[in-house]
Image (cartoon, rainbow, N blue to C red):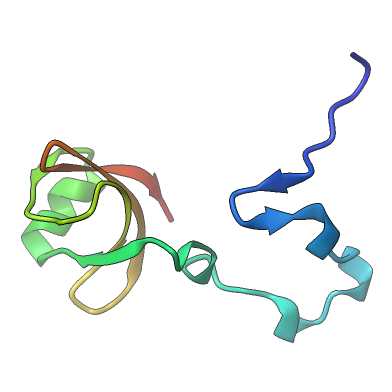
Length: 93
């Protein structure tokens, strides 16, 4: 193999891409909007400290796998992964 070209990732496809020089500001999406298909989950201030430091949190979420994590001020913190009622950070922003 000489090269590898990724054609799609998540819900993004290369066919929808734009050359950087042709890109306008109104075509940009926020990082949190890139993950709109995941449920939103808000943490208390205490939970947020633990979450950001890598500690698993015991949670009651009816979702499995990935959730969007927010602070009580509605700031997007990142993605969390739920497994067996435990939430841990997957990707912080």
